[in-house]
Length: 617
Image 1 (cartoon, rainbow, N blue to C red):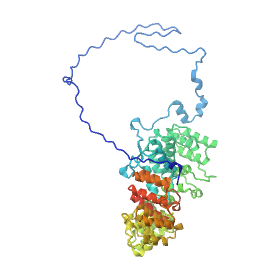
Image 2: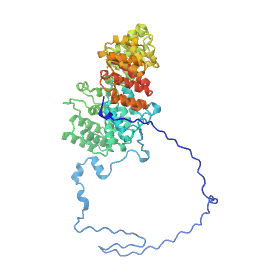
Image 3: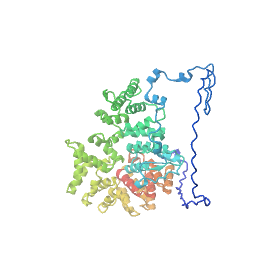
Image 4: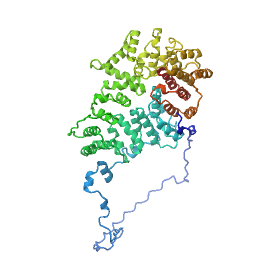
């Protein structure tokens, strides 16, 4: 994780506070007698109107105009002898050029393009941008105000968006969406663009859309416009992008931008011109045929709809975000062959697309829950609606029925059997089913008869943060087992030290590749301060890990923790958790992430990330 942009030192300054001193009432500085109002003066009669001037003869051609009394006359400048009477008329476009101009070009020529979509009196400041206040669980507003802009810019731009940890994703989303002031030396609009861009890369398009909407469109920069377009397309809110498109002051290139311009023109009342522009784009080959057809259908919905547009998927080999958004917004079904080849990012979008049928959303729901986009409550709500459908039998409805059994069956063994059916062979990376069953697992009464399933039950509970419910299983689990290891880092308020014998027992029974679970358990315990440093060193030697090793990233996150800066710690933690699976996570990174989060008062997040690492590795 060593990168050049983290090589320079970082001065983390504490936020200062200013205090206003109360002042007394202003003293009367006027001398005595001036506080009595003077008598009003007697009004004087208005002067009589002056006689109208007598008309005079018109001036002869070429002579200077004659000024009347009380009148100011500006003589017209005389043109040079060799000049043409047309002046600048030669620069005006011809009638044919006017006919070929787009609506935006005509508006620009005639000065009709609006500059603002919000009245000046209602425009908002960009000093603090975000959607979660500190009172609502957001980060402190001034967390980054005194931090170097180069560091924050490098961290946000360098995070690709895919995190190995579900809880790490949730933490980073909360930090990015918080109402924050920009770092020192960074333009607030750029800061908003960096955050919205990372939210888009994380698949959090709804949060990104809310964030960009917190900035007036007239203040958009090129990067914030790009982030806004990605957010609107990611949520299939095509018309929502129109303020950013129509008020943009930059001359953008690209087929999608020109199609968006035409669509927005159609919804502004110029359907005919928009349709012509879109057909010209398709005929010129500037955009693929399927993209233009979808845009024409969408633009046509703004008018009388007299022209039918048939969507033809022939020779289409890929479903892009543009095609996915337009098809969903129009209710156009994507052919089964193409729908089955959606990228993971688009599959996750199906889970949050309200216009799609419930059964179609299920396919991406597990992926979205596993990533941290969907909560356990959202998953339960989705399957509850599926259970209420009277559409015969389907795999999703079978899962919904089993979920109901896991809640209402009177026999605990039957409820556990229903949970096992839902989990199937899902383990590790296939974590969506465990998110779905979190609250049902919490209803299970701890019983030694269910000890073999204790690790799965505890993992499921912790997917929703139900650590108190998981804690009830401590008397049941066997020391040195996987369930014990998960609880060793997840239990709130646990003892400061974990016995070395139990750790040794877990290490002996660890069958994970490269003893990854043991490495991450040791890192989690050390980061939470729940293992003696000497024991940590001894077990580190046995596992061939060195938690004392330093790098540019470890130095930065440690300094952020020393400054008690939650937002910067969260950003750096997200940077350190990048990857497609837990096999990409090192014990060194997990140790510093857990330690820094615990140091800045986010012990719950630290415990959940450590427990997730042990459970899913």
